[in-house]
Length: 269
Length: 220
Ligand SMILES: Nc1ncnc2c1ncn2[C@@H]1O[C@H](COP(=O)(O)OP(=O)(O)OP(=O)(O)O)[C@@H](O)[C@H]1O
Ligand SMILES: [Mg+2]
Image (cartoon, chains in turn orange, green):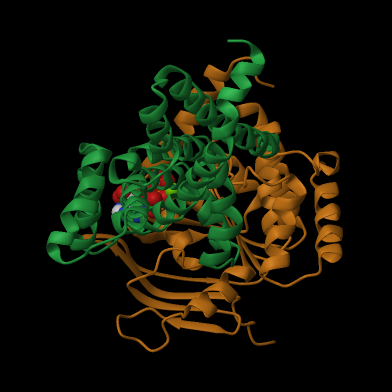
């Protein structure tokens, strides 16, 4: 039997506090290449903070992070705390998509997508444009390359935001509730794009309230509870046969809201 | 007065008016430079982590906006020599007006920066862009567009405020008009002509700004 391959991302005992408020209380997680990990949990349980610690948009207070050749020890006074240059190198290889798209409104769709490959990776313009065009083709927005973001629907903007992250050819993609700000009828197109990425073997970590999507698309589900990973396993087990009382309650609440949404949405297909 | 009498009457003063107007433009440009240096420093100061710097910046803005520009000019020109710092009327005037306008520029810059959603900076940093690249490529181009109208207004105020320097013997347009009136006793004609010249200059300024704004309005 071959030895288990090294994980792409290894996190150990990660802690983060804001002042006296400890939000992450020692998270450990290995993510292997090709895994699609859905992260669920109640509001305030630390899901976003965790995602933001992975690309160090938030500086953790303690813990270790290994990603490819990067190794960080976040402990106060540690010598392997990330430098500015190391941070940039890490972020260049980890794509992140936000709830609020965050496209740059003064740039066209194409300019949004080629900006980072040109500035960060030093790609020549022609090459960056070629990559961007094939990505826009793929997300079905090739005809919008010259449009400014304000002319696009929310779903289109979010797909461009995903393309912008993909243009960096990341090894890992982080999605933080990327469909939460969308009108219900626009959620499907974004989820479909994410599902096709998962199918192609992209390694993904996604925070979502779409339990059905988590069940269909992810290879693994982790449940966050009060700053700790309370359950971790294949989605079918975690979501169908939750062990803890807390997860059972959480799922009941979310599924109930979901049903309520669908009833309120009435005419939606 | 017939037209040719009217022409004969004004003609001798045309070179003087042109020279005084030129001086107004020079002073305006210098004041704008000083005001942007002050404004950037104070806008940064207001965002500083250090309490004393933040308080000093707030005090500066509070003081400048709460007192008349004329008094500020008098403090610099008449007051500072008492502390051993005598300045020429021109230098004192440029400094005083620059310091005055700087408080308004600081507020303009601050409001422009706060209008950029934080998420746009985050998405840039998350892609590996540096802070400087993010500022230069994402933040500033948008801030410039947002603040352009206020910047134009401030430049127009500055241009008009140069007339206050007539009180400290800078022979700009207003004081030049006064000296002619003292000998010709024709205040109506010469103050009207002076007003027209100010109008031409301020209108030109807003035209330039309108062109820039149109150029910038592509993406809204
Ligand atoms: N920058 C910050 N400063 C102070 N407190 C913060 C900050 N960011 C997050 N928090 C706090 O940390 C806790 C966890 O927040 P986080 O956004 O990670 O939760 P979440 O699980 O993503 O919740 P949601 O489902 O609502 O998005 C919350 O109590 C929040 O108020
Ligand atoms: Mg969140």
